[in-house]
Length: 66
Length: 66
DNA sequence: TCTTTATGTAAAGTAAGCTTTACCTAAAGG
DNA sequence: CCTTTAGGTAAAGCTTACTTTACATAAAGA
Image (cartoon, rainbow over all chains, first blue to last red; front, side, top):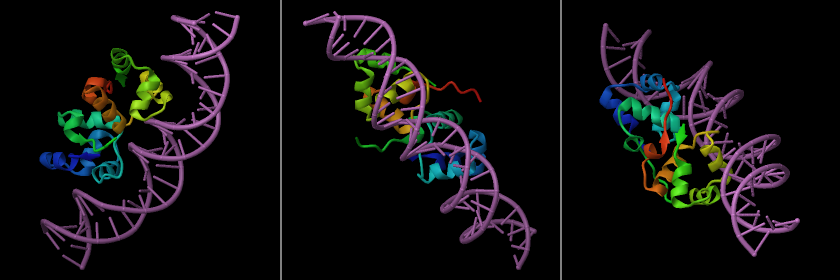
């Protein structure tokens, strides 16, 4: 699953740690998601979407084939 | 997290087992999500949205306050 | 009545999301 | 140089998503 978190952060001049705080997760979680180590939970995806004023689909891109 | 899976299934005349098959999960997973026992993963939410031709926001409703 | 179909649920186990602690590197500024 | 800041990563542990097996109930139909 690709995502635009790094760019959205940059546009708002946020560090990984600051975004983590805003989303109530650890900095490592943000880093792992940005790096594609794992996907966020659906609740976390909703939270990020709300924070950025975007839809989940705007932020995360499903690459699944099936 | 609320969701409209039961209604969407009904509109398409699908059983929980049939939807589970279409999404490659177990019937118990569909049942648990419909019953609010837990939230789907983000990939599963995307899959359901694709299947129904809707957005994730159309199907799932975030109730988080924070 | 007997069987089938759809749904609900529970228990035990595996896998994935997330936390805490901790260490490392690179860049930037004094 | 030295310190601070941002980012990358790893290990151990907890929580949540999901599986498999299994059993129960209600409705519907032969």
